[in-house]
Length: 228
Image (cartoon, rainbow, N blue to C red; front, top):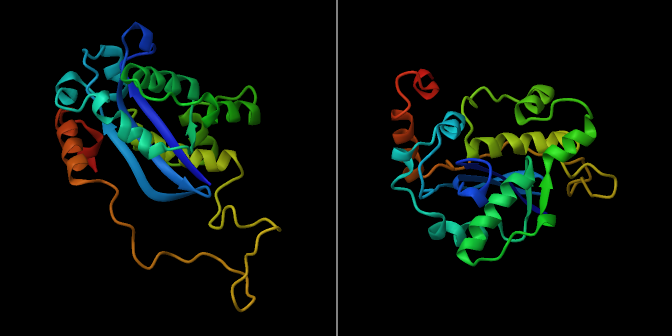
């Protein structure tokens, strides 16, 4: 089963009043396991960035000015997600923005039933408890120390871990441990996964690395990436 864990950053709260998407990040899962395949795109919103939004994600006018417009990347985004289930924290927010952008392009809308809302799952599992992404990271002991600002790809990677905990907990043979599935090897012994003999290639392209370096340079000397 293919799923895509997805997050967006925007200029505000409502596309109908002129707010736009400025970043999309997505992580592919197959059978609840990350494949290493991601989608990441900064987007020129064709408008100025409100200070309140800048304080959330740090994406300013200068950084976004030379990025592609949504009309230039919308089809590629649809091609990446395909018909996979979309795992999103507060799905109504992201789907609202994505469908607005797609509608303005004349592209197909994302059906609401294609989304899995982890915020809704968390509220049902832990009624009355905080259900933000940071709160769930604390609950499940997931390291989110690098999340000093919101970032769509980083938040998608963290949400993928949170999602696996919400649906049953992380385990190396996740999805292979039910009685109805065969977990034995050819010799009859119980199968367990082994470490990869060869590490996966970096998921960050040279263009993305350069864009990140440009972004960090604009944050000043106190940027967390410069203290590593």
